[in-house]
Image 1: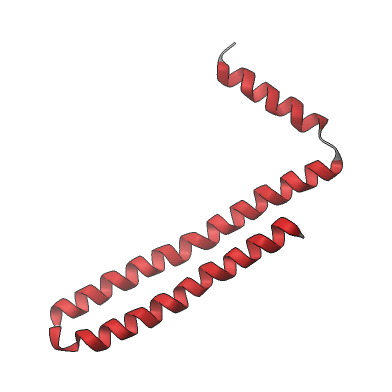
Image 2 (image 1 turned 45 degrees about the horizontal axis):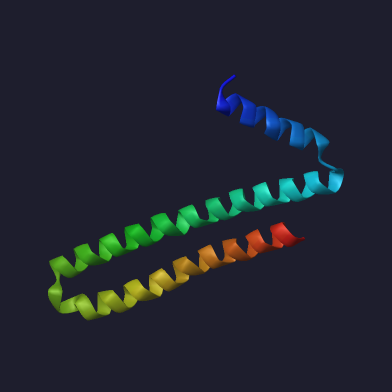
Amino acid sequence: MSAIASAASQVIELAVEATPAEQKANSAASSAGFAYGLAAIGPGIGIGYLVGQAVQAMARQPEAAGQVQTTMFLGIAFTEALALIGFVVFILLKFA
């Protein structure tokens, strides 16, 4: 039996032996982690797109770089707020 198979069988045995409270805690932890992972993907993509477009705009019109940069930072702040809301939901799911 390989090491992976023996580790998997040990995990299954522990999961079967878990009390209902432990099963609820394990389920809450896994769902909270999944929720935060999904909440972090969107803002990550959004910020990447936003910065890329801002750099492109600054390259096309260098005289407007200050205004574009200010707008970019505002957009980053609002987009990052979504990730923070996702983190709050993660904490609520974990400890509720």
